[in-house]
Amino acid sequence: MIEALFFYLFSAVMLGAGLMVVVSRNPVYSVLFLILAFFNAAGLFVLIGAEFIAMLLVVVYVGAVAVLFLFVVMMLDINFAEMRAGFQKYLPLGLVVGGILVFELVAAIYGDAFKGASLPAMPEISNTRALGNVLYTKYMYLFQVAGLILLVAMIGAISLTMRKRPGVRRQVVAEQNARSRADSVEVVEVPVGAAARTLHNVSPSRREG
Image (tube, rainbow, N blue to C red):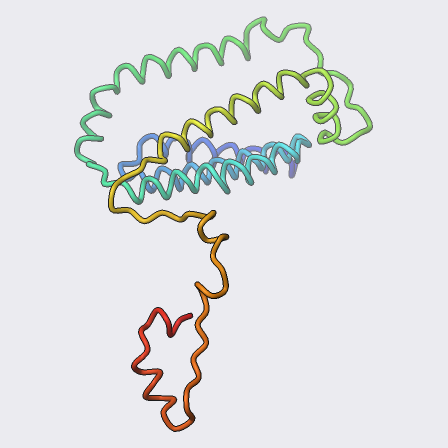
């Protein structure tokens, strides 16, 4: 009874949060509702015993992706009137696509798609270890290819953003490492009585050094 209660609770909150992601006029509110939907989806995964997937959902999607979306939305200058106009423009197409997805879900659940299907026997090991055994044995090469694709995408994003513009000072690590002590530090002997006056006359750069 308690598991069923939590299931309906998490499901209702997740569906409501997902609906608010779409209908919210403020993008910041949409991202916050998306985070709420991720948390409730993680709760559903915990109920079925997939705690590793629930942890990934919270750490990766909530801790990284959703927070990144929130920062990007808050930093961009978004024209809300133009966004609402675009929403109304593509609303019929969205309703058609959503209706097709709902029809496919209903046909898969109440149709003959799962007739005769049975769940495999759960092993005596944790789902984290079972996932690792499958990922690093049967799908080892596909996993490595996916990592290479992500690496190429990351290098491409860095290359697109690394643009040299005039008038911008950049850090040169080789020149910094090649500096000697004589170029960086200057020892000044200050008399006791004139310490405050000399410190006042020293330039700020040397004072910091």
